[in-house]
Length: 260
Image (tube, rainbow, N blue to C red):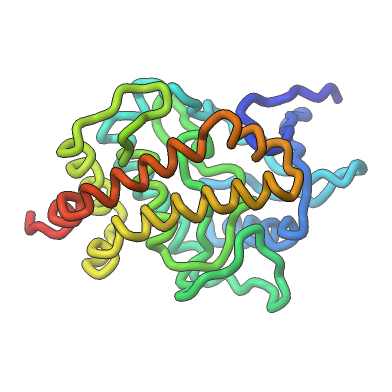
């Protein structure tokens, strides 16, 4: 079958072949496929199914019908309905992973972190979310999955979907009070506990600094895609947003902790 190059591959070339997607495999692929099989068995339908490797050594996944959101984002991504639906989808995904038992010697793209409450997706963002009729239905690109605390995924997803930004990525920046309101809405829909709510601003900031460190490490190791991201100034955007979250941490924390 003919191969169709899909847009938005990020650091990998992703192609569609019929009803499947082919992507470069890595040391983490075996564990990711085991996770995807577990999700299917657990009845979670918000992720692609895995079908091993093809003759070229690429992983084979189901093509999930729908549209993936890329920046600048379409209007439907910014609605409160979408925000809450993504949070509920993330909660359902996390809950489905609690019974997954990875191999003791499993390699992950990102190292496991304690407390390993769930298998984090690692990059929950509009560009890794499939929409149908303007509604989020699935997450894709599980390469960065790894055992870790729920809060790591929730904080990064909230950063992307609220969004908690001072710069934006091709779209208008919302007032910080509106960011705080949407952050609360996201965490309410997820059902985040009080201790995690108090820690969320700090974790979101740490996630962005860790992302920049990863980009720099990969670029230094010769990864052309990450070198391109640095040349385009992506790290400056993330560091500026990290400072924004730190500067308004008290406002965000108050919004998260106040009684309804």
